[in-house]
Length: 457
Image (tube, rainbow, N blue to C red; front, top):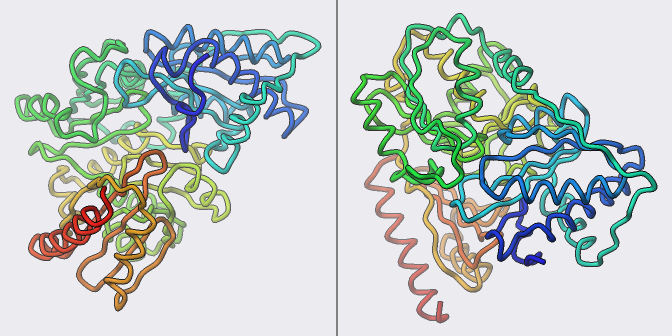
């Protein structure tokens, strides 16, 4: 069997196929997930399962489903699905769900994202640890009756759901290039955009889990080169870059400049607040200050969150938030069962551009007003000790420990956050201008380098 310790991460299950995740491990996980669900709710009788286009997804899902049905639970099998379509299915069916995907990871990886009924998240501290424990203990349960498997095609229903967030007639006379990177965007983007009067060109729309053109990771600027080139060649208005399971999207304006997840969050928040005044909007703590400023200036209630979908979804439920955004390109909507969807966020930005009668470069200028370092990673064996040293260095500044360490001044702020899965600390720094950003970056790198040399990192 695969390596359970290696594949259970903070937010999902993921690893190299077949050395870390294989058919045996997936069958065990399917049985353990079924047991976990039945312990929480003995009335659970069905589950929805989807797969991405990776060559190993069919085998792994078949074995997982065997574990589930051996436990007496029925499975509604979606077949090829984006992650946000799986969440939609979980929501409308009121059933727990699992999708086989490794998101933006290379072809040799695969994994599973799990959720409770109505797309309620399962992650570290919210069930994933218990499922792992059941796997290790091998205390799986066979049901008295074997569950059944029914195939279910929800692409049409999902398309209608996504389009319900906008007025499709407003998005017209606009040229779009979408790079789906041979991922699941190649399934959902054509289905949705055929209902709009926009002109769209799709790059790498063939579903191919070997990713023959470039990795399906839009966070890496290298993977945006083809899209940027095509936007400029065709004088397109917008470029859309999707990750492998199509739950994230990054936008590129007509000048070929990418928008950060923070800028997109601010634009979507502004659009929502103009139609729903006083709504609560959540932003994670590494989002730009412009996000909170946009929310409060437009009359909304801004709430700051830890990084990660399980934290955000839980906070959305307790605060009744309408929308939440993360700098990493995840956008969550109350009317989407509080689940994230890149395509919904993209459509809202396109509609807002049409409403404002501006191009994307003009629209972004209102929100792209600070200088950011981007996320920088440092190999540190004892991150908590480093954070204590940094906190003492800035003892006269405002600090908090909501997620790692955040230090805030009048003209800059930074967050140092230990990785959940690796011996790393992640630094995000933002300042009023490039000069202050570089000065602070030199200071922080000096602190980290000194600590590293003193402690043998």
